[in-house]
Image 1 (cartoon, rainbow, N blue to C red):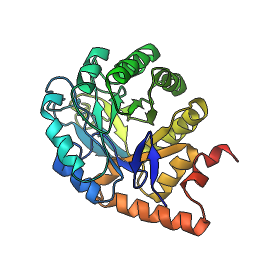
Image 2 (image 1 turned 120 degrees about the vertical axis):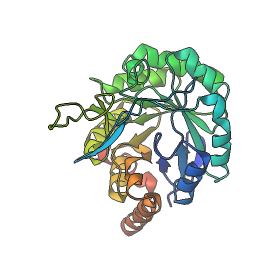
Image 3 (image 1 turned 135 degrees about the vertical axis):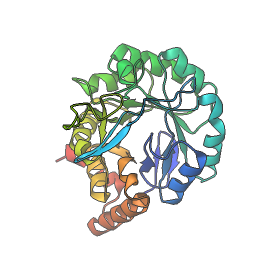
Image 4 (image 1 turned 90 degrees about the vertical axis):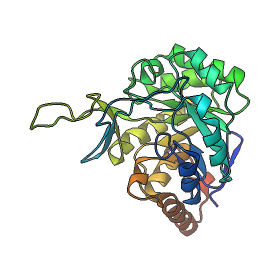
Length: 296
């Protein structure tokens, strides 16, 4: 009931691991697959090893999590084994990659092997990367086009919500040849310790994830569905099966789950079970609810 084909990739269900959570090692990704995920997105991988920002790099707040990890990674040259190990789980592995220019992205995409690439042009707190690139439509189009020229697998582009009009960025990705867009990355945010007056995160500001950003993500998915001819993958604040259904009704063909794993490693199985029960009771399938909010 929940299986689908997304950009040519078969998924046993529309629930995927989001980049940045449990995606650093092949072993951790296999554990997520065994917990019911239909697909796995790796930690974002760059050209050179990167230690990331200093601690504190993540903190729980009333409405979710703030993080400023700073894209720590071992570089693509040291990551293929982790992808290969994750593939042993039998579910598709999507490599999240980042860079400072189109050449960086193409270098990585031409060297590693995965079932798809997710281009991180949306991290809100890494200087010279992510959203500093992903807020410019021309750069997004160029990066997407270059990766499409070297990749023989689908290319997804992960978009930032920290823009005036996300549709313009989505259209740029589509023009560059993207097979799908992923919406959204974290929302730029910060917290301050009132006893000292200092920002809590080592980087001073970071990105907000968790339930608080779900309404923002839903609106972005809704807008992108109306503007684009390619699939939209929803991410942001999904914690239960109702959230996943809502994203699909807004126009997401599939969803990614991140922060909710921190409190429940079995969240994928629980969400898929809830979705199956709901669809069965309604006598619907995924195709019936896909984009439903646009037809009413």
